[in-house]
Length: 459
Image (cartoon, rainbow, N blue to C red; front, side, top):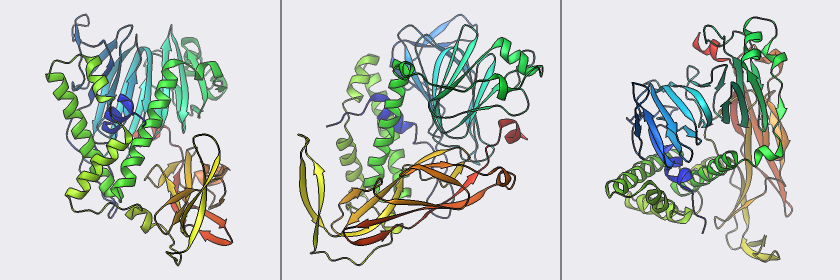
């Protein structure tokens, strides 16, 4: 039974639980009240008091005010959870100033943080409105995103930005005003990085060169990908996605999924606080919360669904709504070949295939130019069983919105002439020939938005 890590489930679900879009009419659920809060994953992590010298040790569950400075010691690591569900994960020997972290009534999220020293990992769930912004600064650079994951490192006057998901824009900071240099920055994509030091930032600010020329995009070396902090954060992001997917499969609809996520946030934060009140150490709290498994999570969600009179079936309500259902022959059987633990192939009888559906981990239907989105093609059988046929399906893009780099791996890309037009509509489709029958999934429609630098967002 797979055990979910502390950050992935407790903090990870907390990182999704404060605000979500409602599934009916495109309206938004009211953002739950609450400030950003900290989870201390390894001790010790401190809050630097106003005098700049006094340190107050933080404990899991402590809320953070805007302007708070966090400092981790040689062993300390922590996660700061934002009200919209995004997270900042602080490495050891690091100092971070949480300048602004606010979710407005109109669902505009503003995050501004300055990394004084060390490393911080940003996991941005997705920004709600065009006015939203997420900035992580150092003394000479600022990273701006609209839904992604990336690493910021600042050591000895040099900044390194490493892309993990989607696209990040990097701009130099003016050495005098400390404001972002106007104009285009450098775009960093997955598994690429850029470095910038004071001299380079000064040259860009004084127009001696441009960010496009001075900031060299490099591929992340394999040894760097094996770095402890990077590997841990990638694993935590994956486990978080798995936990959310498990809840989604049980919850049957997007709206119910959001409700169950909020319930999980509440339950897990309350459990952490209860353990803290019992005077458990941070390590004991972590160990007790890490004992959670995906299956236990599923069972707890099922119990709540049943309490509300909702039948838990094998096929989600959301899937049923987005599926072209073929005529079913319930008694007819087919086979699915699966690999056993010993590596041999076995044949498992199942009902006849009934439909093909396209799934993705995100419910958002608006992407930014340069985003990478993973789609899955799922063959649904009459008895509710499912088979992932992503690699076997034929994928098609309608509209000038991007391409498939490989089966299911979509890269949003607008043509230069279309970028000036604003949002462009498009869709993806999947077709599968299975045992002599052609299945066509209902297209997933979405829009692709041109990448807008933060200066333009602020107007």
